[in-house]
Length: 141
Image (cartoon, rainbow, N blue to C red; front, side):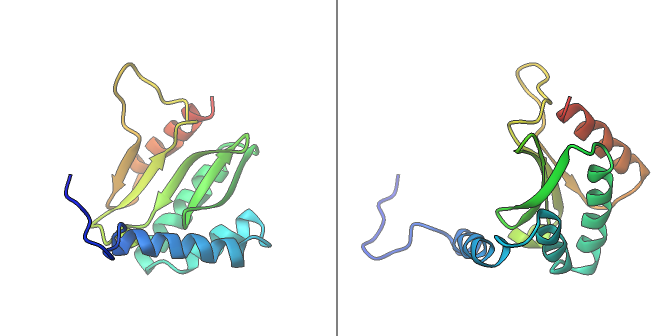
């Protein structure tokens, strides 16, 4: 492992931006409901990401009345029994060529010794909507 030069940063610019975003959320978002937090984050996205995020939000929130939402590390996230189940990460968050829909450890998606925990999304279509609905339904089972 390479040694850090004295005074050099341990964190990348992207990591520092995430920490700043998390601090901003802690200050500004703590008094907002989870739905308000997520609405604000979605409003900050590019038009194409915003459309995708709104579709995902509608799909996930329609699966069960027990799913709640709030931001998690600057991303819209969905909770079941107070644990993050899944989240939407806009591609612009890390200057990626695609957005991501991911799952956390509390999601019941285990399938042997190897299974996917996140999915790249380039476009929202009926097949993607169906897969998201099926995976979230399984994740909370």
